[in-house]
Image 1 (tube, rainbow, N blue to C red):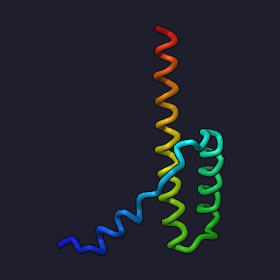
Image 2: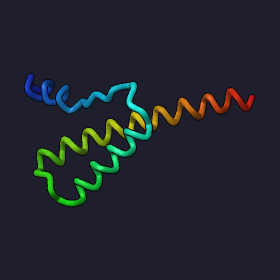
Image 3: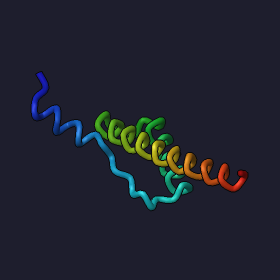
Length: 77
């Protein structure tokens, strides 16, 4: 049975990214997170948080690229 603790953990896992974060800055932060995670300098908990942040950054970047692709299609039409 799910407990309230599980529900609280779920909301804790959701990382919020500032929608105004520029693509270039998001990619740079993502590259730094990957490098830090690969270096092994994070604890297990820090690695999990870095992974969650990285996943959110990746989703943010993918969304921005999708928007740009749609704009290019409009210009090409």
